[in-house]
Length: 598
Image (cartoon, rainbow, N blue to C red):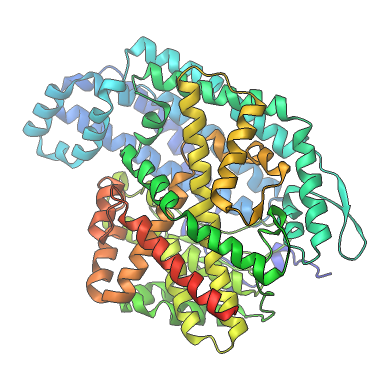
C-alpha cells in the first residue's frame, strides 16, 4: 500500500501559490482585523440611504468592498485548511472566518431591504441624477425585480428569524446521512469482509464480480429501508418549508420561488423534461446495448455502473496529462491555450494527494487572485479529464474576473458547469480521433455516454421527481414514504426502459440524495451539460466565430442574466433546441458503440 507523503514533503512546484493572496499568515491576520472594524463602521449607514444618490453610491461601494475582502480572507483560510485538514492552525483560521461571515451577513442584513424600500421611482431618479450610481444599475434593478416579493421590515425580520427553522430538515438529513447511518459488511471479490461506506459504495457497485455488486446494492439500501418513515417525514418537512416560504413571498409555486434567484423562466425546466421524454428511446437503447454486451438474461440496476469495457490500464504522468489537455483543446484558439499554459506553469494547481489533504477536485479562488485548482492526481485517464474539467471552471472565472468589476464578476450556478463540460467534450472528441484500437475507442465512447446517462438523464429524472413532489405538496397533498417510493420507482421504469429490471431497492434511492434538500438545484446539471455539448459542437464546427462568441459568454460573469449570456454564445435555453442537440450527440455515440459491439 502506497504511503502518503506529508504536506511538507510535496515539491513546491506541485503546490498552489497561496502566497499570491497573502505572503504571510500575519498579513492575513492584519486584514482580518481591519475587516472587523470596517463591518462595525458600515452599520452606521442604516437609516441614511434616503439622504441621496451619493450616500447610496458610497454605501454600495463600501458594501461590495466588505465582501471582496471577506472572500479573499475566506479562500486563503479554507484552501490552507484543505492542504492538510489535520493542521489545527488553519482549521482555526477557517472557523474564525466562518464566524466572521455570520457577523458580516447579520450586520449588513438591513442593506438590501432598505434599498428596496426607497422605491423604484426614487431609485430611477437617483440614477438619472448621479452618473456614478449608474455603475450599480444592474444590481439595483435586480433588487427591484424582487420588489413585489419583498415584505415589510417587520415581516422580513420574522422570515430572517424563521430561516434556520426552514433549514432544519436539511441539517437533520445531513446529520443522519453523514454521521448516524451505518451500512452492513459484505464480502468482496477476494473473499475479504468489507464495511460499506459512502466513500467506497461507488467502487463496490462497479466491481466486476456481479455477486459483489448485488450484495452491495441490497445491503446499502437495506440500511435506508430501516429508516424510510423517518426520512420521509424529514423530506416532507423540507417540501413544506419550501411551500411556506414561496407562498409568504407571493410566488405561485416553490419552483417559481427557487428559479427566481437567477431569473430562470420555468419553461426552461419544462423544456428539459419534455425533450428528454421525447428521447427516452435513446436511453432504452443504451440499456439494451449494455444487456447485450454483458450477456445477461436480465439486467439489474446494480449493473448500471459497470463499464462496457475494462478501464484502460495506462498511467499518465502529470506532465503528459497537461500535454494531452493542451493538444486536445487546440480548437479553443491560441489565447485560450496560452491561458492554460499560464495556469500550468504558474502554480495555479495543487497536484498530488498528501496526508490529510481534502479529497476530490475543485476550482476556486477570489476576485483578487488567479484561479486555483485542487487535484488529487493519480495518473488515470479519468484524472486527465478532471484536469480539463477544472481548468474549464478556472478559465471561466479568469475571464469573468478580468472583464467585470467585483460586483458583476460572479456567475450563477445555472452556467457554472458549462465551461468545464465544454472542455471535456472537446477533449474527448480529440481522443476519439486519435484512438488506435477498437477497445480504446469503445472505452472513450462509453466514458462519454455515461456522462449523458448520469448527468442529462439521471439529473433530469431527479428534477422530474422534485417537480412532482413539490407540486403535490403545494396542492395540499400529504406525502409519506410509500408515496415517495412509488413516484420514484415509476420514474426509474420510464427512464431505463423494458430491458432493465427495476429492483425494489431503487424505490428508496430518493432517500439518499442530499441535493433534494436544496430545492430545484439538480436540473441545472442537466441544462448546463446540454448547453456545453451544444457549444462544443458549434466550436468544433464553426471555429473562430463560435470561439469569440463563447469567450463573450465567459467574460460576462454576472453582468446579465444567465439565459442572455448563453444566447450570446449561441445557445437559447428557453427553447428545447440545445437539449435536443445534446441528445443528437448521444444518439451518434450510441450508433458508434452499437457498430463496434457487433
